Length: 260
Image (cartoon, rainbow, N blue to C red; front, side, top):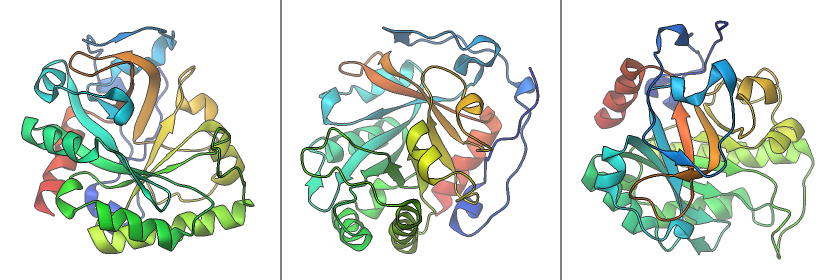
């Protein structure tokens, strides 16, 4: 397996930095998964199961999470939907982040961005509904097109998208003290992000092949590799993700987060 660089900035860099560190996943042994997948993909030599740290992302559609069971099955972290646009809160958000905290699962809230509201309106809404104690890992900006929306189908030009994203993330960073992670999909990244936001960590969706095959020159910290996962303790099918680095890298992340 060829060596490749991964954007695993320490938490200090999430706050203020702009450098990255190379990690060699040749040192990471394959890890038997306790999860199942109703529609598994063959990723070949670059299987996500060669990464030791796995996590989930959840929302109201999961209905119920037994966090102790999920943790015992191998869930190390959870991205939890918090808000959407300027006026929606996921009804399971508070239950889920408190449950993750009680079980000792690292957690982060995410915001689904709508282009029919201003970045300040959405930042105000997120801050009003997400307490600082709900942000153990950095908050996440979910940036993707949403053609199924009944109310917001506009697609701003790339310069406007990037300016709005930056304004929203600057607001969150100023309030929570952590530089947000960017979640995105292949098409949205291609349309707006190629060559930009290199000092941010990315959580990339790539459910049919390795992110390196789909994202031009993009280093990544988290990889969402399936949306049809079956995880003990988690209601319904769920997304499963991996952290790019080793167990020691992960411990460094958490140590810095706990110190904030």
